[in-house]
Structures are given as C-alpha cells and as structure tokens.
Image (cartoon, rainbow, N blue to C red; front, side, top):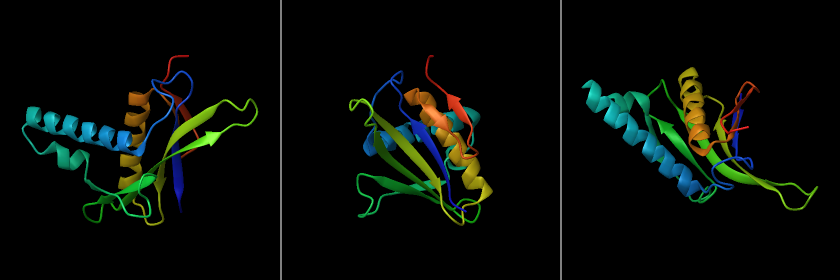
Length: 141
C-alpha cells in the first residue's frame, strides 16, 4: 500500500520554498555526516545509514527522484517537491517535500524514510506530516 509523508515549509521556516536540487544537497550533506560518524567509530557506518543510490529519471527531472535500495532489505523511496497555492488571500504559496513509499516498500524503507523526513524537517525548520498522520513541528512557534 502506498504511503506518503510531507515536510511543509510554513512562514516560520528557514526558507519559503525548496527545489529538488536543494533536497539532493541535503541528502549529500546527510551522507557526509554519516561518513564522518563512521570514521570516528572506525567502521563503514555510511553504508548502513544510507543504503540507497539516488536516481533521477527523465520523466521526473526537476520534480522527483527515487532512492534505490541496495539489496532485499531496502527497495525504493520516492522524493518529490511541489507547492500548494492557497486562493483565499491569493498571496500564500506553501512549498513542500513529499516522501512516498510505493507498493513493495519494506519495513526498512519505512524506518529510513522516517529518519530522512525528520532530518529534512529539522534542517528546514518545517512541519512534518508523518506516514501515520501525526504532525511534528520543527519550527519556532
């Protein structure tokens, strides 16, 4: 069953909009952090913390990419960006990052997706809508 989580950028967030390239840079930063942690621990922690390859297809260019897992424990996570236009005032546009677990995703994918969602929401100071419907606030209120 397909499941979605969202990181919404609210007016109190660090930035008002996010591009797919910025999300890729955040994933690269995450991988670098895990590599340094592994060096401190003395083992290849990066592969355990990020067991995916980032792949962007022609049809998803600029809108989404997917993370392809290395093996049977991790399969696929889809990451996309978008925005909602609210027509009530005509001035607010809410940007968001969507994390999708497609059919066939494993429990390992869901665990890693939750971890990535929390990381992205914390870095961007956004509002995280988890797969189970709960909301976590990472911005100052």
